Amino acid sequence: MKKIALISDGWRRLITYAWVDGILNRIRRLGEDIALFQYNSYGNWSKDELHNIGEYNIYNLPKLEEFDGIIFDSSNVIDEDQRSRTIEKLRASGRPVVTIEHDIDGFYYVGANNRMPIVEIVHHLYEEHGCRKFVFAGGPADAYSNKERVKGFRQGLTEVGLDPDEHPVLSGDYDYETGVAYMQKYCDEKLPFPDVFVCANDNIAAGMCAEAENHGYRVPDDFRVTGFDNLDKAMYFRPQITTVWQNRSDIGAMCVETLMRLWDGEKVGSHTFVTAGCIYAESCGCPNTEAVEYREYIRNQIVYGVKKDEDDALLVDLEAEMAKHTDFAEIFNAIVEYFQKLECDGLYIVTDRKLFDADVATVFPQDGYDWDDLVVADGFDEGGRTSIKDVDELNRHLDETGSGNAYIFTPMHFREQAIGYIIMKNGRFLYDNPYYYDVHCTIVKAVESQFRQNQLRKAVQRLQDLYNRDPLTGIYNRIAYTDMIRSAFANYTRIGVICALVFVDADDFKSVNDTYGHDYGDHVLKRIASTLDEECPDKGYVCRYGGDEFIGFFPYATPASANHYAETVESKLLKENIKISIGIQLSHGHSEQTVEEVLSLADQNMYEHKQAKKRKRAEEAAERGE
Image 1 (cartoon, one colour):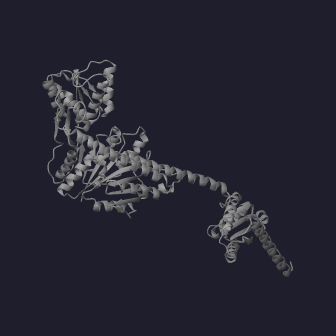
Image 2: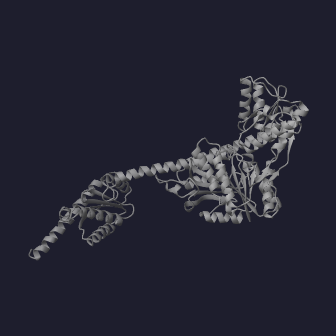
């Protein structure tokens, strides 16, 4: 099986699924053993530069040298540094690279011929409509397609005998608002209108036409407008906009065909152009093409609106479902169930295992991923839930079963820090609903919110733990006795569970300190504490009550288990020549006893134990005649 990597960036909140659709259709039609792996970011949408770093980190995920070919859609990568770094990686891979609508030295270009349709439009406007004053209403000045269309504009002017320098070129964005802004400037500043605005795309053209009408002007009566790309808003706009037809799916298909020819050793030219053609309509003064079905278009818009509402409602449900849970396993389960309702064949959620720890000091990588920490948190494939947890195993699975499929990888990150990624298999729903960024952000925000809550809980617990811990011995202190043992005792005795309280006192501790020094005395206290803690039964607590006094507590006690605990602790400490006295007292189950009453009895038993040992030592000394 051959593998193709598609490196892409969304346009604002949208993902261009037409490339994927064209590639998959061509692979399947030809029956080729090829899989597509798309690595898609949204690095041009946010104004937060750190967020964009996190988006573009997905480009660090693929090991490009392991692919048989690469397709690079850089038309929306507006960060020049990011584009340059990506191009360097593509070159370093040693793999054949096809670029979409961006001419890069050493790579193979596939896309529309952006120049010649504009040249044809200029000729048409000059020869058929008598236009002599032109303005190019452009998109981003540094965008490759825009630059090519500007060159076509200048070339066309030259060919009809006009001086290109006398005809302005405007720069903005590719959106509707850019067209509105251009027209507002002309109207507000009372600038003379040209005979025609040649727009870089249909969005700009529609914005100019609409805003002109707001100011009392009509297209094409007062001036003419043309577009490019043949979007719905061109064909169905009023006036119907002159545009350039091209099929984006054909571009995707041509990309994979170019790679296949290269694999077969064929000589391939540096540029491959898909078919494009001009559609002359009302905005330049030509008649309506009559090639549209307005009722069918309205019907489709209604169906699309209903479907979009359904998709939005599903997303709202997902957001609400994720908000219900504090456990990541349940959150990821909600995400998987959401995607199972969409038109896609599979999903894998890959996360950094540090996400689950939520340590306060956790820092995730910013450049690449911590491969050893990545795990498959959840997922499904062809309807069934996945049992794969190891990322290497997942990669092998995709390599073995990926033929004829498209996998879209999107990043999960907290600003610039990478926490993992999502893999979606054959996301056909994106063709009609390309707003995947909304889904992407909803998921990441919910995961980050829960992670921060977990971090906060852990930080509070750590502070509480420090507050409840004895700094010398590390076990709980007297405050913890009040907060934890007292409440635990009350809860257990309320339901009839018998509890044991153990009171411990170091023997002759003052003498130990005076004889061996305070450092050794501290050592004795630490050993008593650690031994009591190590031997304490499940659900029990040990605390330093004060000075050389300690308390042990555990539920579900019996006389045998309590005696065993006391004997084990005393025996282990005696081997280190550390002597203690222990008093044990069990509660009565269902009773009105308080923990203080039981502890007082344990204290008395400890005192009796200590006195008994003193009497025994005195008797032994008398026998020796001391």
